[in-house]
Length: 284
Image (cartoon, rainbow, N blue to C red; front, side, top):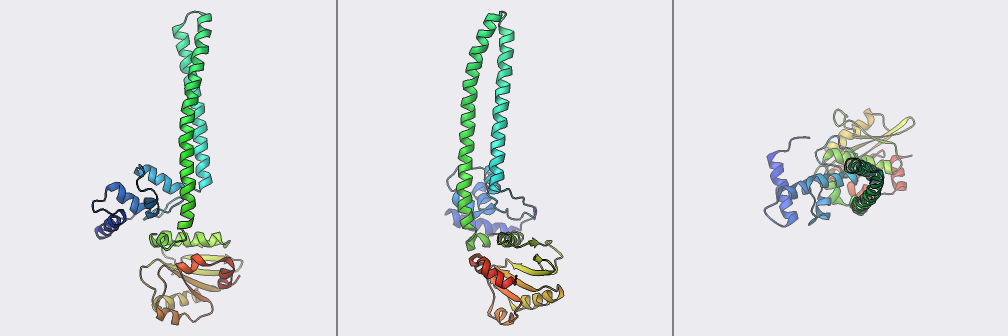
């Protein structure tokens, strides 16, 4: 994880204070806000520590800030993991309780008749206990799955908001643009985070390629970036290129971009675009 500057921390704390409506932001509140403003807003007032907050974030595939290697687990996989844990828990509980019952019967009774009687009674009691524990465990897991499903649906909607994209780190901004292109059915690949020669994403189609540059800058993109990328399209021998900017482009940039194979999109443009419109831009 990258080190965060003191100035950045102070800025984050100030934003979190505004977010929660109080000047004394707790460590837990700050952690929630910094990790995911979406979840922080959704879970205000819910008793939820750092570990659980991180698990929920991971289970609904929210990219973590400042993480270069964040692994995402889709919802179906998460639910399967929970169900498998539930099954193993029940098996272990039955096994342990049965062994305890057998040991108790062997050491406490010296008659086969009493042994059988005690055995039936204890196994009946243990069976009721196991069912109660299983019911409690299962209901907890069901509540969690319902919560993850509910938040997952809300998060899907939230992903199409400017606030979501504005809170991503530049690495995750690139990954999310790549993911969105993949969802449209393109073979989009996120290049290495360094030494990419100005290319963040490449879309391949047989012997052709279309290159994309992502700009998560808080300001509008100026003409210098456009001119550089025009050169990159030529050097890369790409059929075309696109720059996706968080906050759009300056007037000078729009004047510079008078090329048929270069396209400038703000993140709002990309969010609102459908497959047919994107096909016209990419050209296949």
